[in-house]
Image (cartoon, rainbow, N blue to C red; front, top):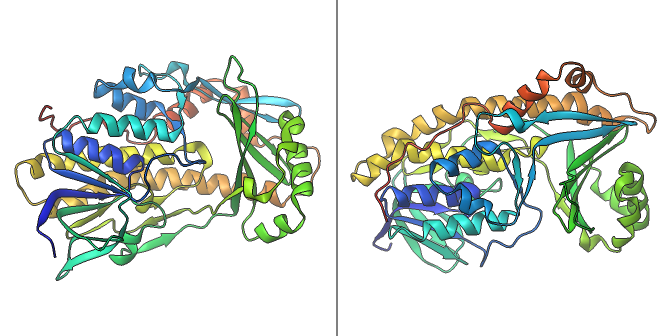
Length: 404
């Protein structure tokens, strides 16, 4: 086993891992982030940066720099249902500086965070370095093994390696599966840029599709019942194009761009959470601790909140050469309430809206009661914006700043 090389070893360079890396290094804690890919350029990632996350970057003095990166701003969310468009959330009244969702490619977000983190001498980012398992010192996690044959020790390992986390499996952390009724096909269709961001969704009996406006293209999410991927693909690309055109008339003229299944990526939707996020030497955050449904686009933002909470609770102690192990349970205690509430809302949407819609025979849709209430009582749109945009128990930056 190698000598100790770092205090905090973060596995995974996604939103949770990179923000945690920035905050621990900012506190003066020697921090290394391992990312198995050579860059951040991966398609079909969660790209919605909510007001809660933008507020955190404002607290760090980094909001203007972040918003200098390519993005669109969505101040209201609305969806068509039948022949009517329903406003779901109005973010313009939030008590924050950035009263919108920033539609920013995730590689831009991660590259920005990495550049800011590199300003701190305590920070190291190692690309093309894949963790393949944990190192044990008795019952304690003492570091990780890499695909290159290295053994890297650390005082604390943070598992931020996603919903298929190698580390949470190696560490035998207990997982509760809440179930999800659907999977998703992701694909993109080129379009012309418009003055306003047109992100929307189409909901009808038997058909659900979300359209995320990325400026020069639509990022499309086609929902179908879990377990039916082979059936959908067996019908062929031509039938799939026709179904997409029926589901979302807005993009009907564009679907001929789909010529091959290689253009379509499968997302296996999971909704689960660890019942214990930690063991001595290890803490799981983000999707490694709780896989979120794409409903509401909240996954990135909950992951960032986890990272902030972890730094708030652990960084000062670790900067003073203290033992983080007695504090790990506090991170879970802080974040589990929000996780349960958000996942509960997502499961309710799965069971009461998505599953019945996907199972229904095609026909003239009737808007669900929640959509009707949102239009009848506009103040509810502000409440929805607060829940979607700010989340449950939003975090604030409390970790120390040791300077650059």
